[in-house]
Structure formats: C-alpha cells, structure tokens
Length: 310
Ligand code: BMA
Image 1 (cartoon, rainbow, N blue to C red):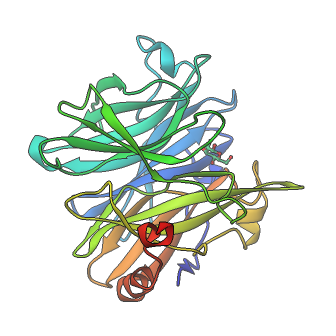
Image 2: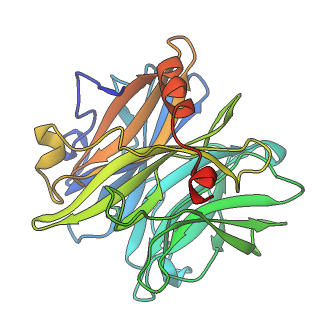
Image 3: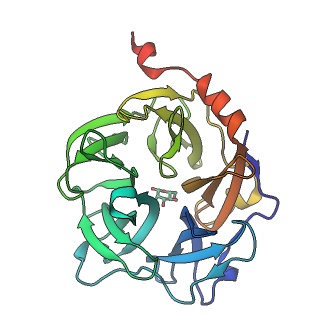
C-alpha cells in the first residue's frame, strides 16, 4: 500500500547548516503553498530541538531554517533535556497551529503544547499531563464543546494509546484507553500515535506505531485505525496487520535500528495521496505515499475492534 519515495532519505544530518547527530521524527503540515516539516534535531550533546524545513512539492529543494526554530526554554524545567517528536494541527477556532511535543527532563517525558501562527514565534501553554507521556496530538476542533488529545502515558508498565478531554487546552480529564497493545501481536509491547489525525469523510484516519521486542531490540512498525468523526473516542476500525515497517537499509541502520516512526502526514489533493513523513532508524527523515482510495478501502476492510470483544 505504501510506496517509499525514491529520493529517500529526504533529509539527513549532512543537509544541516551546522553539525548535528540526527534529524528524524518530523511533524508535517501544509503551510501556505508549501509543505512544512518540524524536524526533531539531535545535537552533539544528545539533546533535541525542533527545526523547520520547507519545500514546495514536499519532496525536493528543502529550505532549512539556519538556526534551531524551537529550542528548550530555560523557564520551562521540563524541557531541560530537549524537545522531541512534534505533531502539528491547525486549530480552526483559534486560527493558529498547535504543536504537541515531548519535553524531556529528569522528571521524565511529558507532553507540552505551544501555539504559533507563523512557525517563527511560539506561545507556550506548558505541559499538559503528568509523566510518563509521549506521542500526542490535538484535533482541529472541539467535540461536544471539548478539545480532545490523543497521547500515550505509561501506566503500570503498560503503554496504550489514550484520549483525554479539555474545555480550555490546559485542564484535562475524562481519560480513556483508545488503542491498547495486543498481546502476542506485532504491536504487543507498546503503541503510540503516529501522525496527527487526518480527517476523511469516513472518520479520523490514525497512523500509529506498534513495538515488538525481539532478541536484538525493538521493531517499530506502523498500523492504521479509523475513529468516528463526531465521537473520536470510538474506534471504528483497526488494522490487524502492520502496513509499513523497516525494510530498507536507511530504516535498518542508524542510531536505533529497525525504526519507522511517523509524526506527520498530509493529503496531496492533486494526486489523491497520503504523504506520510517518518523518522528512519532515529537518523534521517523519509517519505512514503499511499493512494487514498486504496488506503480507505483497506481500512474499511479492517476489523471493528468493538465487535471482536462481543
Ligand atoms: C520512542 C521515541 C522516539 C524514537 C523511538 C525509537 O520511545 O523516543 O523518539 O524514535 O523510541 O528509538
């Protein structure tokens, strides 16, 4: 279903205007007439920051901000060890972009939220929920008056995808498990949201990473789910199989081998394609595309996870 872009990897540390260790796990969004990636950049101390890269076609001629775009702010203790794995959503009622990223510090990973209109200046809302929490995205609008957040806390050592709700983006509650790990399966060890939720007429298209532990380390692959459009706490479909995983050398060789980790996607309307941007082996930024009709037909054929329980 997914085809790798022939020019992969799109971005590597060699493209950067200064010395960095790795560039990976980018958030992605349409910004004006360009594709904007917010790339996680790991510096030579091992701390990450976020940097914007833009391109007209989302594939070639990337323009990379000469300096880090969003760096740890010393007024925010939770950011001391860096910023990681952003997801970007356009919030309709506020007419600005919301960036949910992982802030790292001695306190453990937490989800932080920052707002921007231009990807040059950012207003921090702060951290949203207690650690350990990762892999978060908002939705573009409210549901029955409340914002919704998909995220991945670790509780009793279990790493399921949850959804939580808020009237004001600051106070969160009504927490529910959305997509749990599945014992024995490819996503048995951990799951976490991939790209931000993508709106389709049939529901919110969710990509998520599933982790299996093996004798030689973790395997990070990608699965699909579909959430109800009006009640996104309802999972309508979930793929039994993974639909994308590490195969190519650039996905198998790097700082963390055998990792494909999407954080951003967008629909290329002209080509009717989903463009999925992902980090490969915690080292480079890559792209895979899928025909939307083929993808939706596949998702429709996936099991209804609620029916399985009956
Ligand atoms: C996860 C996150 C990702 C990373 C992945 C594989 O826990 O930290 O940033 O890509 O592990 O190392």
